[in-house]
Amino acid sequence: MAPIEAQAFKEGGKKGVDLQGVSAMGGVCFFNLAVDTPNGDMALLEKVMEGANVEVDESAEERKGGAGDLGKCFLSAGDKQLAVYFHLPKALSEAKGIKLKEWAAAVLAPVEGHEIIEESEEFLKAVSAQNQEAGRFPLKQRDDAINAGFAWFREKGLIPSNDDSSDDDVNYAEAAGVEW
Image (cartoon, rainbow, N blue to C red; front, side):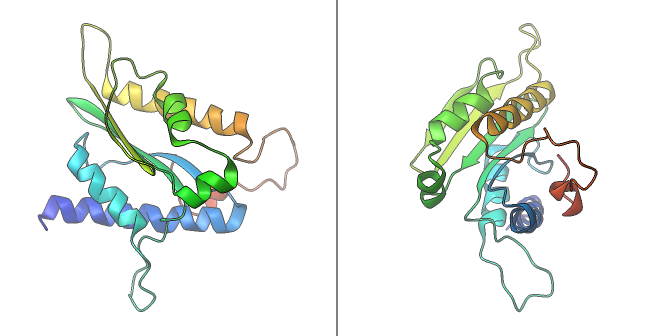
């Protein structure tokens, strides 16, 4: 594995452990996250997903992966394009009544010019090329897509609502070290 591929796999492994921790603490099973290493490269984004989904080796010094049963959308903004990679395990889809295409449509709605380049029952890949004349910038598109996905999660009741103004609310993502 090339060094950059190993770095992408490692980033995915760390994200996987973080997501598994958030899910264990708060019951959240769906995530839209920015990842840095791929820089908009779909092949490297695939390595991130692979790292996140790898089975946890309990004998390893450092835990990696373990998020294969969670719904994830990883978004990577580069100089030339935005790359987006969804994983929705079939069992989770059936348990929560969520369809991959519906989730992808919500996340990709603000991403003008996106193209779905591959899809299967559990995975979907999309890209959107930068186009300065049209005002399409990968970093802005990534942030807009994450916000749209978060709003959709709220609408579907997939994340705890913020209606309660209690002081004992815990930001499970922050507690697990996940940066949105």
